Length: 443
Ligand code: SAM
Image (cartoon, rainbow, N blue to C red; front, top):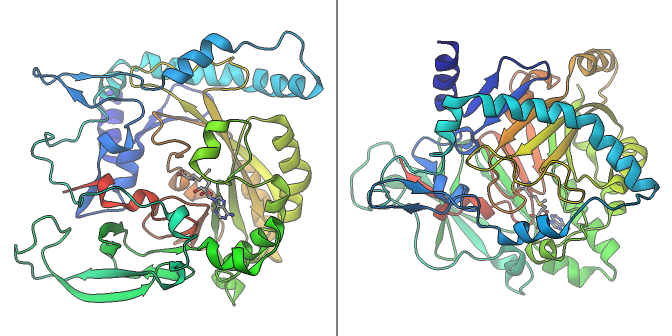
């Protein structure tokens, strides 16, 4: 009956906690977790999980699951651990060997949870059949914000926020709500766009619809102005950071308590270069983390790759320059719908896991002691999930709530965001990316 309770809790929350493991292990369905940000719409599982399921529903209603990535299969064949490791590779391998037993144990927990595995296969299903699914979407292809931010008109682009009216009629089928009362038209780039109400709002931009969660805001900067203004990439990026400065609170007492960062790290993979621009490590040194942090201190989460050079840079330069003291790691173990790992655990350059480093950015006075106490209680944990779109991370923010210093209702920000979450501020050059109505269906 404990398993049944865990499963019931999972179906509601999207979080399954394994009780039989020394290290905290969680299985997460990001779709269910994200859906807590919405009441009128929901994230459509078939679009979230498009990479690891094909949504072929056969006549008998059985979902045929296929792993789409044939290139990763080729990679598996090609790639082996190098026979002789250089110094850096040896250090990376040592790091891997340290976490390997813990990851294997976590994976065993999942493989042993037969009922949960049964649910996994159906995670990409929309609960209503495809025919019934009422999409919020309008036709056409999704715009690329990265491209739009470069055109000369970018500073003139506007977005219309439509706030819901409580008394509804059924005039506009396909809208998130049936009637909208207040409309607000604001610049979409280089502007903090805020939904301050306790309900999601629909936004319209270039004839496409977007969903803005309750009490959330985004700041999307356009590249154009900076390209004109700056002569080198370095100053170009610094001026992007200038845009972060707009989010620095005048009063540190209203700074952010939780800061999540998923930087566009440079990567050897040519494939990644096509998806979004990347930046050399040193550019991240000037992110004003201390200034964004609340005066009570902040919990800072940084997604890193498994490259040893990057790990050294973070430990030796980046965290110290941000004033962040390391506390614990979260390992994200990636599985397919049948519960198997997305690649061999020991595959040298393409591990089936990524790491999120947590640390504290010190506050003032008393809060310093409080923070070092919290740091001591924070432990490593493992989150297992089926990956969504390329480089999309699972929404782990809420798992950390109890470690966030300061207020009961923490102020949270994600830097380099591609989606929005209720109560959060999202900053980046494409924070509306996964807010396109194409990713949602009506409740
Ligand atoms: N956490 C995101 C998710 O789960 O979908 C993925 C973030 S991805 C690793 C990095 C993001 O940073 C991309 O959206 C990329 O376009 C953006 N980016 C690249 N260069 C940037 C810059 N100079 N300033 C701000 N964002 C940038």
